[in-house]
Image 1 (cartoon, rainbow, N blue to C red):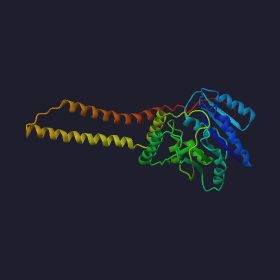
Image 2 (cartoon, rainbow, N blue to C red):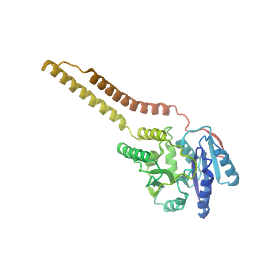
Image 3 (cartoon, rainbow, N blue to C red):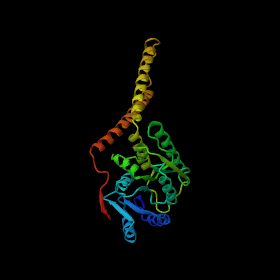
Image 4 (tube, helix red, strand yellow):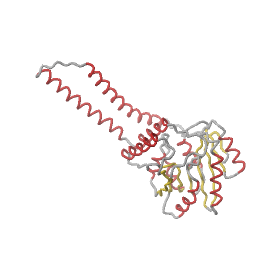
Length: 311
């Protein structure tokens, strides 16, 4: 009998978890000769998420949970879930039902053929999402795929159904600054994509603000591309060349045409502009230095406070 482990990262999802459990249980009960494990990862929730998980685990032995000592982020929660999950196949799903459990049987059948190592999902629409957010999301994917050798599919979700072999390959990448969408592409393996229209949350509110998504996008740029560093170098060369040309022009105007050098307002604007470019380039370098600084400390990706199962 094959075993499927479903990893569910949770942060303040007390309202959504009962709905998720009900829906995923309906699907799992309909899949005969398949054993299931539900592994919820409580990422330092401030509400009653852990309490809800404990109640579910008392009613259903398939429900297992890990609770962090504090909020470490969804990336850490997914890594912990993949590491602790025990199954022939492992899936990652969100608790808000934006990842439809109804796709699980089809995913299982595809992997059972042996042709694919992973079944991934992507949204083909962004219905219900603010237009400005959708615009920047699509812009991120375009930039990411332009500057990185690791391709990230537009609209890709973290909802994936993977073989144990692929999961083990992901776990070998134990870096602290994680960008899973890039890691999934980096490890390779044959992937089948399933498309579906966007589904709104069943309950609760999204934890991803525009600012958090922006910072997450920077994580992706620095994790899988060094081209921003090349960009800062090119910008520096261009401005050095432009400055040299301007010096020649000023000298010629002064000595040949007797045109005095003047215009301090324009000079001030140029200084501010060039200074801004310098700070921008320094900021790019600083991002890479900061990531390196954090990585070399070798801090744990997460800390488990409690769980209801043995290793």
